[in-house]
Structure formats: structure tokens, C-alpha cells
Image (cartoon, rainbow, N blue to C red; front, side):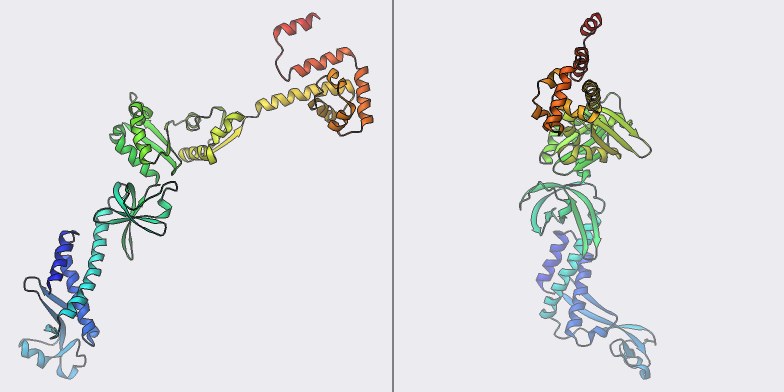
Length: 447
């Protein structure tokens, strides 16, 4: 055995941390492979082993041959006639297995070089097995590493003795990585595949945020504050629901920290991803109000059987409730485990339309118009008979989609309309813009 093989054993044992017995086993396997390649017909030998003496540097190949009767001797690779076996071992019996030294005379540097290549392949497999043994219990932890290289859209991370991979699905779309960058990653799993164990890492997993909070917030580490749920769209926004097991501890304040120091550290690690910290409530109606902030909710309707919560907001609050690209409502739904439906509050609009309808109906009664025509005339600006009288005939014709002769007839009806009726129409029109004051009501009553 040459010195480079000895150096290789020491390297894998000391630098890679592989057990010496595993290194020697890999070396013995390598020499057996080299022997089979060098000796014609050696592949037919079923039982073969290599004896490596690490002190003297000698390697001996042994083949285990079965002792058979001289007349039954047919397989020279796996059998030995009893007469020949007893020359070396007088007490040999039929059926015994005897080791014979089958080391070729020229089993030297060529075999060593071949063995070295095979040995390195075996040691790489042993190294991957060691990766699995060491990392199989670290799934769910955060580790630090350095960006080593890129394989297509995957990022290979140097973890010291080992190497992990961030698949494209586990990357954050808003983050760019450069070779040499030092980053923290979440260990999703250690997969023991056919080609060897593989460490799968992530920067986008929701539990990455969970581990960051656990490491940053002492109250979470000692179970005073509990993370009840996390919903994340990596790179954009994360919602975290927290509850307290101690009435004296504010869970939101504990996570935010003094002057926001704790959450700032987490946001910095997430490259300024927006993080919402929400107080957990078992009441869905209460929880959804906090979860949809900063939007102000007007009404809430719960369907507990189907787990659907329907909320309404004012029109100007709708964009806040839904969020950019629907993130606010979508993350709230993930956090609650309910279907969150956000819609615009139509109650004020319905009240306005009802008032418009009443006023248009009064105007139609005055002018003898049907409900559709009266509504069109009212919405065109004819809130009262006086206002209609000031409209040109061609304008009325265009608004109502009628001829100018028909529009002129409407104007003639306006002039013949009674003044009290016009006043009544004016009063109704005023209700579409503001409620009548108590003083005005008294004045009309006196009149």
C-alpha cells in the first residue's frame, strides 16, 4: 500500500470524521474490485476478501474455496479438490471452506491506483451516510452556511463538513444570492435517496419565521408566549398569531420588543419582509378584525358550519382589507383556517338609492311619467319641477332618449304643475342629500 493511500485514510478519518473501520472497509472493497478487473475470470469467484495491513503496507487477496471430491471438481474458481486441499491443510474435509492466497505477483501500483479511485467513491458514499446520521435529527433547525455554487436554479450551501441544497421552490423570489454570501437557512428535511442523503434547505418555509421568533423572543422559548399560527408569502408579507399563557404578559408587545428591537431583527433577517403580529383569539369574529387591520370592518357574518366569515367594509377601506394582490385577505384565511370573504358595504348606497327612487316617484306623479322615465329625468338633474323647467328640450330628449316634441310636452306639464306638488318634490329631493333638521320640520308644520 503506497503512502498516498495511507494519507487518504488519515484525511478521511481526521478531516471528514469518517470512522477508521469504515475507511478500511472501503479500502478492502476497492482492492477486491481492482483484483477482479486485473485477473481474467475473477468475477466468477463468489467469496473473496482483501486483508490490508496498515502497518506494513501489505495487501493480500484471499479466495474462499469449497473442498469437494476429486471426481466432482469442476469449478476452479470456487472449488478445490480434497487431495489438493489436504496438502495445505491435512485435516480438510469435504464441504469445508478454505482461504487460498490468490494475490497476483504483479499486484502493485496499477492495482493501487485502481483501488484509490474505487475507495474514494466508497468513502463519498460513507460521507453521505454520515451526513444523514448527523442531520436526520436536525430537520426543523436553522443553520448557517455560505453560498458555494449554483446548479440551474438551485443554490448549493456550504455547511462546513457538508453541503446542502436550496431548491428553487424553497427560494425567496425577491432575494438574490451571490457566491460567498453568508446566510441562515431552515433545514426542511434530510432525504435519503438512491444517490445518497441530501440536505434540503429553505429560506421561504413558514417555519423559518417560527424559528426566528423562537430564537429572538425569550418568552416564546420558555412557553410564556405561544405562536398559534403563521401564514407567509415569502418575500412579501407574513402574519403571525400569538397568544399568552400568562395574563400579565402582552404577547404582541413581547414579540415586538423594546422600541421594536426584536421584530426589527427578524425583519432584517427576512430582507425587510413585512411582518404582522396579531393577538390570537378563539372568537373568529374578534380575530378577523385584528387580522384584517389596518382596514376597519363594518359588519361580520359567520358561518361556523362551513367555516366561512363574510365581512363588509366601506368602499375606501376595501383595498386595505384585500391587500396588495389579495395578500391581506389570503393570509388571514390561511391563518384562521376559514374562508374569508371581503366585500364592499352596500347599505349606504342602498339607502341613497331608496331615497332617489322615492323622489323620482314623486316627480313622476307630478309630471305623469312612468317610473323609468322619472328616474332618468331625476338622475339627469331634474330633482324638482323648477329644475326641469330650466332644462332645454333637446337636453331632456337626449337624457330620456325621446324626441324633442315629447320633451316639449314634458316641459308644458311642468308649467301646469301645481306649486304645492313642486314643493313636495323639493322636500323629497332634499332627503337624498341630508336629513331634515328638527327646525325645518317645525317650520313646515306651521306652514
